[in-house]
Amino acid sequence: MATILFLIPPFYSHFHPMLTLAEAFRQQDWKVVVGTSDAFAPQVKEAGLQFETVTISRNANTGIAAHTRQAETENERLEAFFQATREGPEATLLVQSRHRQADMLADPEGLIRQVNVLNRHHSPTLWVVDQLSYGATLAMKCLKLPFITFCPPHPFSIPSAEGLFGVPVRWPASFHPDPQQMAMVEATATEARTLFTERFQEMLNRHGSQETVTNAFAETSPLAVVYQYPLVGGQSVENRQSIHAGYCFKPQPLPLEWEKKLARWERGKGRPRILLSFGTFLSRREDVLRRCVRGIRQAFPQSHILLAAGDSLPLLVSLADDRTMVEAFLPQTALYSQVDLVIHHGGCNTFVESLYFGKPMVMLPFSSDQFHIAADAEAMGVAQVLVPNTFTSEDLTAALNHALAMETRQKVCHWQQELHQRGPAYACREVVKRCFGT
Image (cartoon, rainbow, N blue to C red; front, side, top):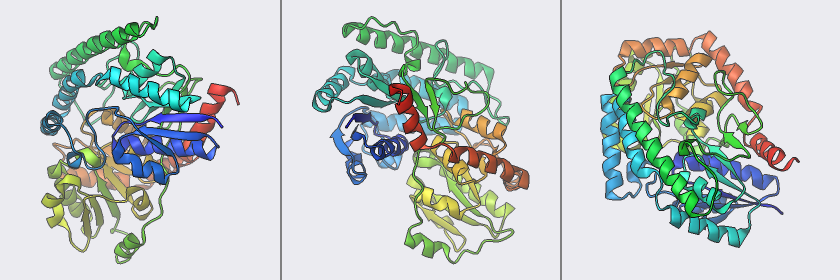
């Protein structure tokens, strides 16, 4: 039996798609080992996979961002990030680019040693590493191990050899970034690319590699790159290396307690059920979540709202009433079938899950690859995009009506069918075919 070893960083939004792919390999009779944070050990073992403790990153998000135990410097950086989102996308991208310079390789020698131990113990036929875990990619290259790359965010998160990581190459129509501020973002990203590539190259040289790296942010497996993203026009076509899984999660049944909660909510014209979620990090923007609820109520007074409040629960719980459920955490993948529309931040997981379940969207992107995802969703005709810091209730009313219109629903249905033809089992088969020709 062949062995595949997944190195999964301690981030909730990355862990679950990679674990789903790991389970797909187990179903194809591979022995699967998962190296990740101890916080995820119960879920790995529950899936019937072998667990190994691996420290891949010094920061983490194993559920709700601020509830995860962090070093004090990481907490300070989180606060700086949240403050930057209040100033706008340019400030947010600038902060992220500056932080990236300190993040580039956390204890690379330590990770290489951990990987070496795992390699001696398990002798994997193939490894799977997260694209944003650059230290893991470095370890693969230094130890000359066969691996594939899993890319959890937007495909453009892998820049070209001359490209800049973390700098959007296109924006949704409602965003008009300031050229001077974006010039600062680009300058900082260029500096980060130079410093990171130099350090990456230095580590390769130290371990006897003859490989020359031109952009360390663009380094991926030469065998295959799996994207948990649909094949959208404007991106590179699927080729020998790229595999567009479309989605990478397992639909979940609705828990009995939630069936009881939702039983009193009748659906009908003028009473849409709306899921409102900004993910594990951006739920901290309670001001935007609050304005969303206010705007929904203006557009559809009889609507029903499911609000994932995260860390902002104490500030938002007062919004709960007979038409609004406010919870710190929602069983999101189980709830899609129960709602008519999703309002979210443009995170990749929520985007592909909404498409899979055929739900139109309103998106409010704040940072990172969310601008690329929102631009794609806009071009695909499956979502309306608003600027989170400046949208009005009137803007949201117009966006909601457009998202619920028949034309949008038809486009969502098309993409739903596209996704259902792919998935983790498809990605698993393609990896085996391209890496081993079987």
